[in-house]
Image 1: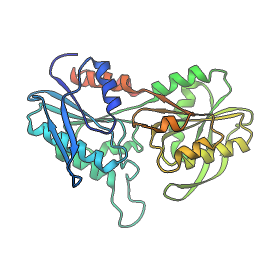
Image 2: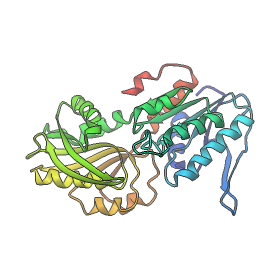
Image 3: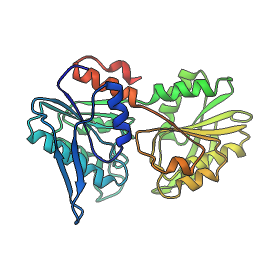
Image 4: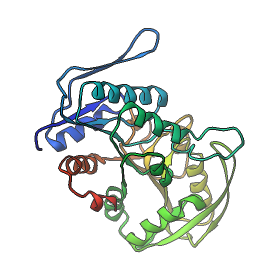
Length: 314
């Protein structure tokens, strides 16, 4: 790795930052990120970063507001320390689901977060599998939008190779993503017709496509409370599916998600490490965690060297 690069991380997912650091052969910058007794966040960069190309590795996962504040304060600290360029590396972008006004008098929170990141002093953003691609347009700075597709495809090809696989979109909004996977895997596609009554509560209605006797894989960008995924698995079994698994990039797994997965017909849930899983992996033997550190490391290297990263967008 050329000189002049600095990798900085907060408390959101230090394990991923350390893995990216090892891939790049560049140690993490010494930084203190802690909290005062009243809950205020305190940040101090303990190394010289003047003129450095800095990358702040910080997913904004739960507790979302704490991790966003850490990200903003680290960026501000680097800007005031005269870093040459600051790239916010956000493997999981919190508030991404609040990307438009779905009711009167509600905020567009993902736009506000984008404004905060820019105001703090970020020069560019590197993220992965945004819930809504148009969030890239909320920024007035460059956004590099990576996908976990290569990592997930490699695992699926290796572990589901018998040609009996059907990729399932859990709702109409995920059809484009599921179709892209099905095309690359050379398998068929099914869609679940679902009606959402309120936030985090969904009702599965019907399955469009043939899943009888098939191995099915429910594909989504994230699994939060797992209600959608588990209901999808149940209806697929009712429709005659032989096996049901699930895959996603972001394992939010909040609230009753782990218990729901454990008690569901899902045989395997394939996720990546964009979000720190902490004890959730031990509580759920069905989870298979894949690393996206190599993709981010390569993207960081190419951004630093001012070379194209478009080949990583597949």
